[in-house]
Amino acid sequence: MGEKVVAGGFDLSDRQRYRRKLQQCLAGLGRLLAEKRFDRPKNLMGLEIELNLAGPDGLPRMMNAQVLDRIASRDFQTELGMFNLEVNIAPHRLGGRVLDRLAEELRTGLGYAHRKAAEVDAGIVMIGILPTLSSNDLVSANLSEVDRYALLNDQIVAARGEDFVLDIDGVERLSCTSTSIAPEAACTSVQLHLQVTPGRFAQVWNAAQAIAAVQIAVGANSPFLFGRELWRESRPPLFQQATDTRPPELQAQGVRPRTWFGERWVDSAYELFEENLRYFPALLPICDDEDPLRVLDDGGVPRLQELVLHNGTVYRWNRPVYGLADGVPHLRVENRVLPAGPTVTDVVANAAFYYGLVRALAEESRPLWTRMPFETAAANFETACRHGIDAELQWPRPGRGGGLTRVPAVKLVRDELLPLAAAGLDAWNVEPADRDFYLGAIEGRCRRRVNGASWQVDAFHRALESGLDREAALAAVTRRYSELMHLGEPVHTWPSAPAR
Image 1 (cartoon, rainbow, N blue to C red):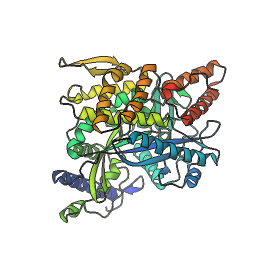
Image 2: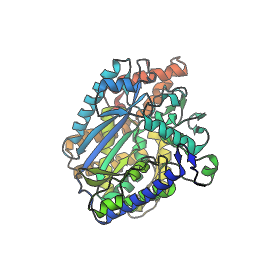
Image 3: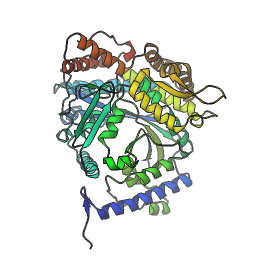
Image 4: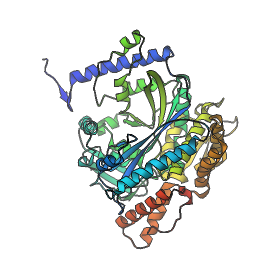
């Protein structure tokens, strides 16, 4: 009696204390919502991009520490794998020429990082999954040398209790195992943040969930993993399997995966935080000394650190975020759907489409999510991941007749969603020149049926037809992709000649 029970480096008392703190944090969040203590809307957007390091040969370079030393900027940080970086762009107010300003900041920052990486024979590549990654690259020895990554890996491995199984059946099939979460590092994404009031949170989150499939259809950029051609956007199945704490018996029982689309529309942000507590055991039960309820009683605003930490280990494609700015609490929707790349113009076009569309859909008198079952949104997401620009989606019929119809994603975007996105950007007071240029890139992809994934696949097969073997073809695709990425013209205008 009284002996500590240790699991993955944390004992049972740590987990019990953490669970109590989580409940206190959730109660604190409920009080903050009830007392309407949240920041008033500032129309703020934020952007993060995960990046790959590759050499002139197209192969990954495990040297983010050396590159970061040379970049020497707080805007650039480590990510999970040694071949990963992340760049964070300061929040911008939506409106005016914000999209052009954002694009210029990204070009300047990424260009500088690319020049610094070149000093150690590496370069920056914005792509959903680097095509030249092999299973030998994605091992625990290549996790970034940061304590939190090692701790997260240890906790997920301990929770699972056996090797991770990667089994993705696409154009080709990949089946292998991993002893660590390192394969997750292959997934490099763009994360779009939007600050919202509590009263608007549910509408924005529901809208973001409803259009996740459309984002993937036009933005897919991850068709290869370990030399196999899989789904047009292979990040979601890879991410789910590489972080899956459930052994097969729990999967069979219907226990939810930590990488999760969700299962219902919501009425408040509180519901999502409460679901995270109810469905997902703590991975990192680290407590600080704050008593959130006492802080509230004293008239202060709690940091809710345990809630924030736990929320960060549940990988929703649209994640609720609680934060503080100058001592004032706020809520954000973090959209995690999109892969990185292909170019700065494409990234900003994807952002314009997202911010415009969620604004328009959140304000509709007859919301989209009241006309489409949540299960349909989830099924659409998988369909879009499998087929990308060629996906056909289930979508509510126009007018009052109701019901769903199957429609090609490119037709849906061009006929219905681009006009809505334009209206949404107008509501944000974005300049028409910015609106038309960046939404025009989305229209161009739909018109030519080209996105990053389709370009990669086409270039790969042309390289094979030219006589290259599979490994050489993937390296050639990566090199040509990197050249065109840094030239900066949007992907739908890229030449389709065989990779050199």
